[in-house]
Image (cartoon, rainbow, N blue to C red; front, side, top):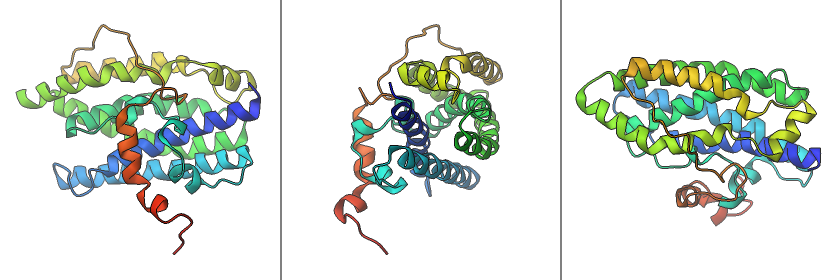
Length: 253
């Protein structure tokens, strides 16, 4: 795989992860269980959308086809997206939303710290800026998982149900493929699998305090990061997210 083609795919993965999770979190705006949580989720969504702009802008430059960050966000179909499946599934409830964010944050923070050492200066710069935000995201999501898991019987039950649903999606974040190997060979990024020890440590420590039992299964759904297989939920989400640009192509204001 040519380096430019692999780099474009790599950048789409970073941008799409942030975009899709950012949009999912934004769905809580005005609907949070408490004012503080409502604002915190909205702020996290804004951070992620800001990171999306950096990744997708660079992706458009690397592609060289004249597509902007907005073109890549609003004018691609579901199977052109490269986000992990974990991030596109519906929020369902507050517990599942927070646990999903924690799983991503526990990967994203060490991942960004590794990318700061990238041989690609733009990747390193974006990672350095994003890591500051990711540090807060992980601290907050971990604390909230603990508060819900070690809260009431009802909150613990809901977190247990959320865990059973989300666990099979989490592993895809750390599965290597040919794009990852091309990026590792070029010195752009480490293999995602190298982040698994740090992810495991964060998950195990948080689950211990949250009184949650880590599932034994290592099965992981896959297909989102290469666009081969997305859930039906991504198409529904994009229909809402992209409706203005699709209805009025090229509109400016």
